[in-house]
Amino acid sequence: MAVTVAVGNRLITRHLLSGRVAVDYPDVELVNAGPAPAPIFPAMVTTRPYDVGELTIGNFIVAKDNDVGLVALPIFPYLFFPLTGVTVNDGAGITEIGDLTGKRVGVPLGFASNPAVWLRGILSHH
Image (cartoon, rainbow, N blue to C red; front, side):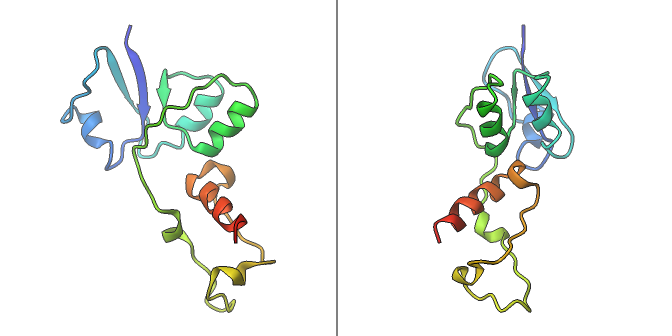
């Protein structure tokens, strides 16, 4: 029986899904989850239709806390330095991280975004 692995079809996984880069493991079925991995996340914590699927760290922590029965594998298909994604209102007078103290900070997708989880952690230490 094949192990099903669901991944989003984007630049970093496209060659795996097309077969240009071979998976060096017998009986692996790669499942194209569309242009982004986000649809995989709720499926992996509810119905679990795949044996392996991408999942954000925030979704994994919530699933683990709810005894969903997932195991995290240390595989990181996409590395992103979250501080490159921080933007501020140029009229707010914010020029350094300390200026955010006491301010409201908007975070897209809550805990469903790895950069949001990292940024919450980083900001909590400043």
